[in-house]
Image 1: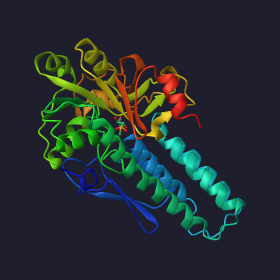
Image 2 (image 1 turned 180 degrees about the vertical axis):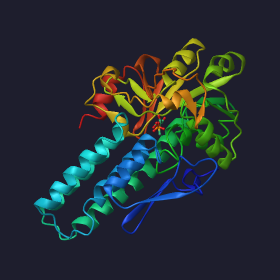
Image 3 (image 1 turned 45 degrees about the horizontal axis):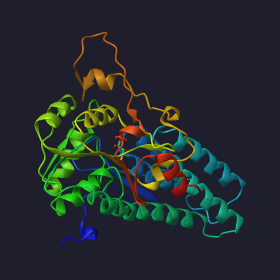
Image 4 (image 1 turned 120 degrees about the vertical axis):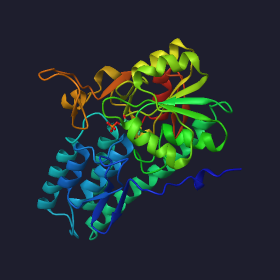
Length: 353
Ligand code: MRU
């Protein structure tokens, strides 16, 4: 019997050494494995903004380190340091708007900093760094729990479809939706995976395909426009996606294209599962309409990696996320178990604090 704890990755998306955090440069993948060193909150915020790292849970871990680094070297917390922490928090919070894990991690770090200050800690910086380490370690365990819950939902030997990148590159562990897929593959419940290329940023083509190859999971990359045809002509057992924010009513924001995929899954009678950790559930956001959707540069649509596609002068739109209404979601797989409609009462009960 395979062991869930044995699922490991050769390449870590982030690690800390001393007073710096190193991010696997996802802009260089799949061509090159290289790390970028960040030793200040400014450098971490820049890395998040520039997409050196991405994926909701990983952005949360990075923000936790960014916050801790604002206190570098400080044994105790005085007024000046507190102002520095406030500035770092504002800077990091402004790096990307949609993934709530960023704000969740900053809240957790601030709460820790308040406790340390109130208790007169003399190891202020070291304790904050240890807290960021703990946030990151916890994500590993949370990923495993989601994989355990999610894989049970899938039939033996089926083909699965997914979008964006939700694996080890997007989290500190094995991933959200891709973590479920990896564990399902070990159990014989994922014989083939169809990742969507995920226009325009191509997380599916560049990152998910790279991870699937590393894990030895059979896959066939499809462009986003092929999803309906593949659903109609192949036997797809389930669609699994991650989420960047799940509202209190179960509406889920995720990578642009996810909503369309959910509509297609509904039309073809295919179960559609969203896999997200507790830190992605945002009980302060009543419904999906209140989620801020990041609007990214037009150039990312008009060009592919520097190659111009559209004629000179053409304009584009680039909403980077969309919201899938709760009614299209068959189940929400979290580290606390699987939730089903009606999501409002179920999430209120489980996440009321
Ligand atoms: O813009 P990105 O690459 O940060 O978007 C990532 C996604 O949308 C993922 O699907 C998401 O974070 C959910 S699970 C890791």
